[in-house]
Image 1 (cartoon, one colour):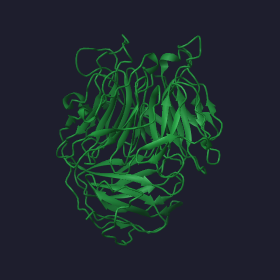
Image 2: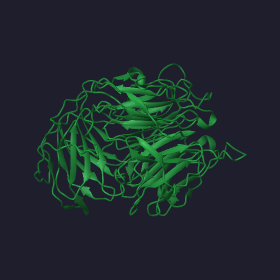
Image 3: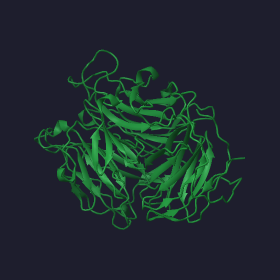
Image 4: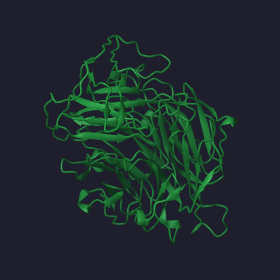
Length: 570
């Protein structure tokens, strides 16, 4: 990992003012350095503030000189799959060819990420993180309600109590599990008014629409199993659940549906209004199928006249991240064949990246099988903390589809200084050839390095610990907001580096393939020992830039007081 910063360092925060018509607010930040510190994020047992200062006001930041990025570290991973106490895999027949997700969340407030893994026809399980101070990753099974035919799951705080709940996708009625603390979950109360449906659900996303006290939930469904003429051209409709006071209203159909395998609410145009992107499996829509983008107000699909061209692919997963530095999120779409990186050109225009970018990953990179790859979960993350986001893609044949590669290695694409990506899955060992499905790129032991969880069909779940040496600096941001949207879904976090470059991440729920995370937003920062931070909150209010050290995990919350709180453990 990168060099350690001080446990306590003065930071600065700018005074409230109006800038470009936005109401600017200060940040309240509690920070804890580096590895572990199991109390650092506990909402029930707040970290004692050993040193607290009211900090000086600044309006600009021009004192830090730019620093060159370090040479790219040789990426290294160690297999920690034995850290699980038992085998966990995604099982089942044709109704579980798709799905196989994992939900990552800190369900017991100890600062370490736990996870819930879908099992399909096999049991789904909850694993609690027991990683010790040695840094080696380990987990223990924790009891959870037995659920059948689970395809995936996503964590989100639905009722605004600052305890994460679980949205569980199933082939059959979906389930909402209310978080009770200490990794205990119960079925959602009847008062929530949740209509579970009975479809074969394979994708999900959520957002908080303006003025609403509860989230809007989108469920994407696959084939209509009741259609006697199926499965071809028998895609089911998708559904939207909008809140009605402190419950959910009647399900709103989103049709036509084209066998959705990934959905993502995103403010992709940076206009303050999220839209819903849906990636669809073309295998089942022989005629008229397409990728979709939905306006929420009024509820309608984007059209070609609006600049949304008809796009057809065997859509499996969505990954989103600003990788060009202009503040607009790019998108990767996984598929059977090309994995498509779309560059956000602004004004609602997306453009496919040149082939030389190195993200298409059309065929396996090892062996002599030249048949098409099958991509599922995709996720960005800075693996070596050099300040450039990398890309992990889980790969695997649907089952034994003869047109596609049978032994299809996962991709670990490391971004280079020129913006291209180089394959490192083989040399790091993470390019296994099981039928992978869902995944997570997340810091499992809080050492500032992103690790990997990979769910496999009919093969054990994989855990890969990032053991890369001589990496750059990093910063992890855990957002909190007052009111019902406790995790600030829809916020944008911006970090300004000493050389003036700005990194941007949007806090979303959805995307990937049947997998979601409620973890701190991780930024790799290269040689930067200090950066500036600000948050554009979901309602458009924007904090002033605040200077902070790096190699920290920060809890950032919106507060009326213009203070920045820093603390260290005794």
